[in-house]
Length: 169
Image 1 (cartoon, helix red, strand yellow):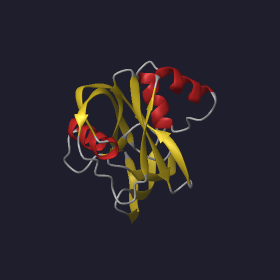
Image 2 (spheres, rainbow, N blue to C red; image 1 turned 90 degrees about the horizontal axis):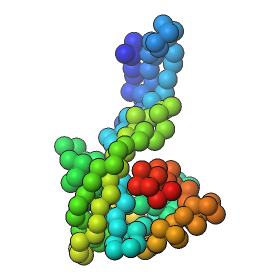
Image 3 (tube, helix red, strand yellow; image 1 turned 90 degrees about the vertical axis):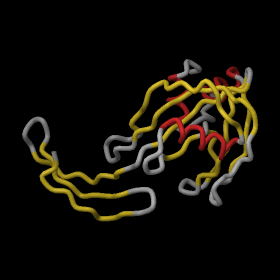
Image 4 (cartoon, rainbow, N blue to C red; image 1 turned 30 degrees about the vertical axis):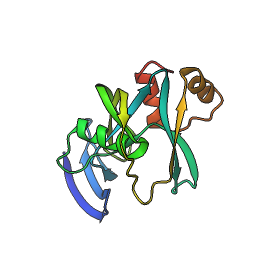
């Protein structure tokens, strides 16, 4: 439990705090914390292929090969978020959505929790990407995904974790 917590920034996505917390060993320590609303990631299968996105990430200034993912909106269910993100980013509807687990992305400074799902694609919808999303859809076999991973061409941690949860890596 925090002895003190002070808000230092509130943006559209994140809230940043300075806090002092008592640790299990009784010591009080200073932390800088980022509060995140949570997110989902989906490994969507289209027959024998996995639907990936190649998305430009401005913070690092390059494209990353990723699985479709996105943050939870206030009051939104995990299933609704998963369906919305896959439709927006890939143009596919989902069926047989199954929750595989969750990860904490970087618990040293954020509480971000990403829920991991797998699903099958079941038809097309109009993709409605956000204005700042530069995305192309890629279809990869399991063999191609493993080769990309071994060659160091998959570097998105949430995607790698999801592929592990799904038994691909």
